[in-house]
Length: 140
Image (tube, rainbow, N blue to C red):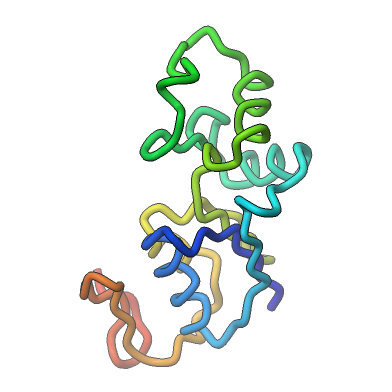
């Protein structure tokens, strides 16, 4: 299965998402989006395919969001996309693309919605939260 993750190694949610993909027996294409941001048309497609608005795909925490005045409700999607492409830290992460769909994996276990049921046993997040049991089934 072809899987792509727009990843930031410094982000715990992104690391957990990548680990869940690998736990499913898949080695994804890992794109470090801060170094290699998506093209505008790809970003627009990812956001739409994930069922999000452009505003929902912007990262506020730990970014220049407030300083740039991006909380202004009068800004258009094009203006927000321009800001995201100029400063990729504003793109929320991790976006994951599989043949089963595209998701912004926040929280990280959202990625399970678009992965096959091929998990190799139990999985816990870095903080110890259990996500999958010993049979690879989601813990609810």
